[in-house]
Image 1: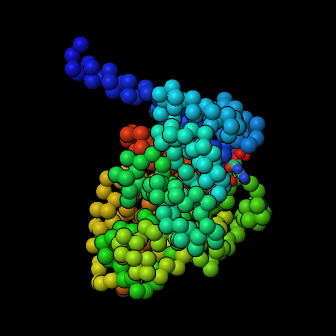
Image 2: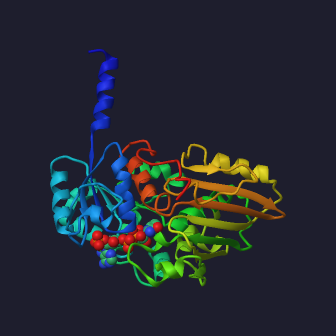
Image 3: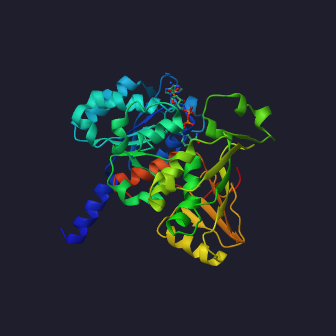
Length: 375
Ligand SMILES: NC(=O)c1ccc[n+]([C@@H]2O[C@H](COP(=O)([O-])OP(=O)(O)OC[C@H]3O[C@@H](n4cnc5c(N)ncnc54)[C@H](OP(=O)(O)O)[C@@H]3O)[C@@H](O)[C@H]2O)c1
């Protein structure tokens, strides 16, 4: 057999090699989105949709056709252990409420022992995003219940941590607003384009899917439809993630700029629209800032920096793993606009983008770049 044939055979084997995958929190919004994306993925094989309920996956998510039943967390832990002992390399997504990921990961570690080190784990909740336990306490109002694990997780914003994610076994995927906040401001911060003594102002609007699958007063259609309101305007938890991301550009925590983020609930289901007013450190033309952002996102297939004069919209990104960035400069203020789908680039898609890299796959595998256009 020629070398070429051998290489082709090897490539085919790599493509066929599947990764058994478990999704915890099966009935949730992001789990539903993950299961939709897994359906299109070339190598991930859904082995378990983990739920507290026995309702089938397709009845909880009628847009899916997985044919899968759900399993309990106990069953999942036993099956993951068996897969590891059989030499497979399983992957787990935790799409659980804040605090529950910590409990689920602790239980998995207790069950798997040393084998837990071989697991590929992506947490979609906020449990392991903040490395510093003191920052976690400030943001969430209580001590971290599993603080020793914090430094063992890699922060999953691929556009800024690609190499670290590629060699990680445990990733904490960023929050949806936090993703938009960082895509908007980290390139300018790293390039020293911004004044850290004046406030950096961010206004974000999110769709109702950001509130999860469980109906709540703020997601009830007659209230949400045609309505809009601000929330957490005394300070949003995702500011802590931005603060953590900006620290390397500014040295210490005390050196980070005053961040002022106000979140709003908008009358749509999917998407985040972020508007930022960032003080420039020195005089710059919009073309210069745009060139800087284009260079910062060079090699990032899911971030598009728009031509000057173009504003990003939600329909172009809904259903896709793409984020759009629009820029303008007026006087000494840089305006940055970002849109993304909170369920995909801000949630399930981003988590899958991380796992792709962790498994040595192209980061784009199974992820849509085109938006729905009409939704
Ligand atoms: N929605 C977004 O846009 C978004 C974006 C980025 C990150 N996140 C984060 O990702 C995680 C999942 O978000 P989501 O919107 O998918 O949440 P969700 O719709 O509320 O789903 C979470 C699922 O976790 C399971 N669960 C297990 N223990 C639970 C408990 N004690 N209480 C309630 N549910 C429990 C439930 O599934 P079973 O009934 O099947 O057990 C539930 O459906 C959250 O931590 C969220 O903050 C969400």
